[in-house]
Length: 76
Image (cartoon, rainbow, N blue to C red; front, side):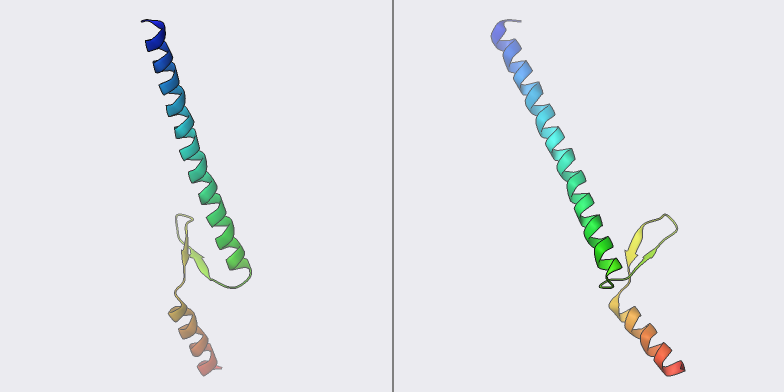
């Protein structure tokens, strides 16, 4: 292997590692931002969620919330 081939192999492997790291870090960053945003919305009362058996949160549709509020109002 001559010096040029070695340089090309080294640069290509460094670029692949760099872009792979950028991709994975960006994906983690976006996940963290979205999660923090949804938690803040839930804590401030703008959305409602339920936690399923696996620990994942699901959004509750507005129609369900309105129907529950109407039922409570009718039966009081």
